[in-house]
Amino acid sequence: MSKMERIFRWLVVTVLVLTTGVTIFFWSKASLIHARIPEKGGWSPNIIKAQVGKPLSLKFTSDDVVHGFAVGQLPLPEVEILPGKISEITLTFDKPGTYTFYCTKWCGVNHWRMRGIIDVEGERTSVQTVSPPLYVSLNLDLDEELEAPSVPDETPSPIRGKELIQRIELDDQLISADYYRKHSPYQVFETLSSTKLSENERWDIVAYLWQTNTTLTGLETGRELYAQNCAACHGENGAGDGVFADDLLKAGQQAAQTMNGEREMAMQIPSDFTDPRHLLANSPAYLQGKILRGGMGTGMPMWGSIFTEQQLWDLVAYLYSFYFKYPNKEVQ
Ligand code: HEC
Ligand SMILES: [Cu+2]
Image (cartoon, rainbow, N blue to C red):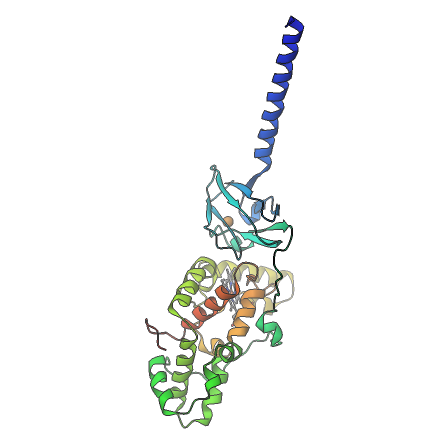
């Protein structure tokens, strides 16, 4: 081999090694997803492309506080994202579509705004029919504020309700899940006025019917989802007094000064699920719709792309349990 040839070979090898090195360096930089509190930009990038069936490797780091990563409607373990550290996860999608990814750690009052999109392209493997949410098919107005004309003067007892039900002839349809979802507790209370029972006894039956449409595992799922996603605004015990309730009110007052809305300010107060006047006037379909769609500017986020249908019903059942204090065992 001549000297020239050897130098030339060296050059080729060096250039090859360098370009691969540089490519890997930039590739790893480019695919690193930065997490920051929403006021500082949230996810960057916040739109990720993927292909059906092709593993998608994601790397994360945080530029400020601890964040978390999860994808809505997918049963994944959440990924913790620590400042200055790199976390990784590999995902494979089996259906095309637009998935929402979101932060799972309360990183500030705007935490829930920390969302992004994974755009998954590819062949649909099976035909899916997506039915509209129940509030849409029922034509419910989610912005209507309903109040129950009367409420129980003591907490209704599902156990007493179960006993009472043997004494009367209850229409079978009242027990079905379909009926439960479409009616508010107050509507069922009114339906029961044809019985000769006292008002409190009728409420006991309503509590029993609500409990039979709830399972302990469903309530447990609802409790976990609520603690992670809702408690910071609505409060641990559902009373509307979460740690961010004051911040929301301030944000509302600011909005009220800039626009002309007293209404706006009032609406920024997270709902109190322990207040029977409000809770008992609303059907599961209404509450599910509210969670799914959000308040559209009231401070209540939308969760439709985050939770599965079953998770939404579990959350709804859990919200009623703030008022109907179900006993710690199944009453069937
Ligand atoms: C950032 C604060 C915030 C978070 C987080 C939040 N909410 Fe709300 N929510 C509100 C506010 C404010 C309202 C009142 C305004 C409205 O009804 O739109 C509200 C209203 C609601 C209502 C309507 C109640 C009614 O009777 O009209 C439901 C149901 C609800 N939230 C459920 C949830 C659930 C379930 C979660 C968690 C998955 C959640 N919220 C998370 C702020 C929040
Ligand atoms: Cu965050």
